[in-house]
Image (cartoon, rainbow, N blue to C red; front, side):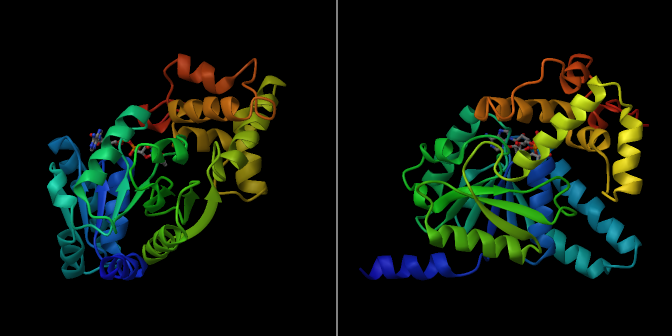
Length: 295
Ligand code: NAD
């Protein structure tokens, strides 16, 4: 009895120590964001080079702030001190929350999540930053799915204000409350959504990309479309530029997941510009060539 009371107290208290699995684009960004808001974080990867890159990316972002006069060098050192890097699961055992941000591969995630669960205590919240994998299917690998949910950040993490918190069938209210509070403490706005293909954002974005694709098939020019959406309609970027930022491969993968999830509403288009770019290995900003060419 006494033990369960303690657990209840702990799950309701704010996150004081976080861990992030995967020190890539997203894991590095989430770690930076947590540390810069004063919540210490341990970043775990299987690869020392990835950890070094994650740390140097955080340092680069902080240096930018210093050179703009928004941060003192003392504060920068303090933030960097809040990020520790490890190759070892034992070093994440003290975390109040573990955010999984390893490669988008269901098998790898299943194995990583099971490993996490065996290394943390019962009060630790476990969240996945997956973009396309069902939260319920990932929860099936856990002994305690009630303390698991999705925590979907957007790239670049330090700039994008939204976090989708995804409730699985077994997720407890206390878990959702703690993850929302952590997102808020990181300076983000959280929305709580149910588990379904595309969660919220991709269910809005992909019908938009489908409309864009259809316009291209009808003969419209992507530069003109981007210009209208940016300069006249007032969005920060148009669909072609956005796809280049997201990455053509990532977008194609998400589009396929949406088509599988909603075959009638979002079928794969017979002529697909995203697929054409992918086949031509034009992956967007990540390899310098997508719709546009980058230096
Ligand atoms: P990435 O390839 O940049 O990084 C993945 C990292 O995971 C690598 O450093 C790799 O070494 C590490 N890793 C692989 N296996 C591991 C393991 N067993 N244990 C610990 N670390 C391991 O990928 P990313 O773009 O940062 O994506 C990570 C997750 O975030 C994916 O689930 C992706 O769908 C999701 N996501 C990505 C974006 C995006 O725009 N890139 C946006 C939102 C969500």
